[in-house]
Picture 1 (cartoon, rainbow, N blue to C red):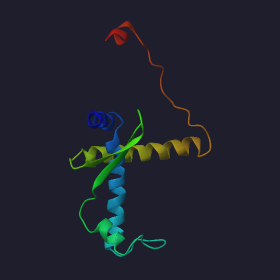
Picture 2: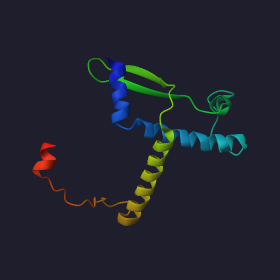
Picture 3: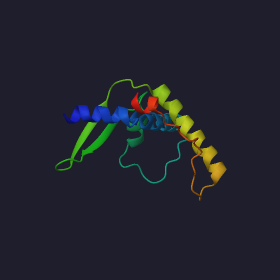
Picture 4: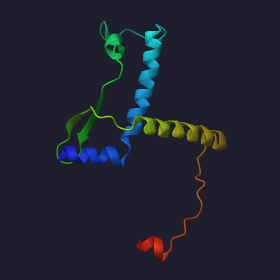
Length: 128
């Protein structure tokens, strides 16, 4: 079923990292909102929009997926579990650090050539 397929995709593709990153940004924005220091450009879509966004302790998390086999159709998932956001957040911080290191090493407008050692494949690694 679609639900189980989506759950596998969330695990396989590390969607918790995306969720942790957005939750981190939400937490920072909420801090500035509560301090009345959140820069806002333009008008709110409706009066009270920012209050609706930040007047609670945790954001609600939704994924919107579009089924690609057959006729495309939306599939909305509301996450009410815990996920392991602390480990996911550590992955986010590691990714940001890696990005900055590689940017400093190769520059912003050059290809980033991976620096991986040659992988030696043996009968043991192939058959096990």
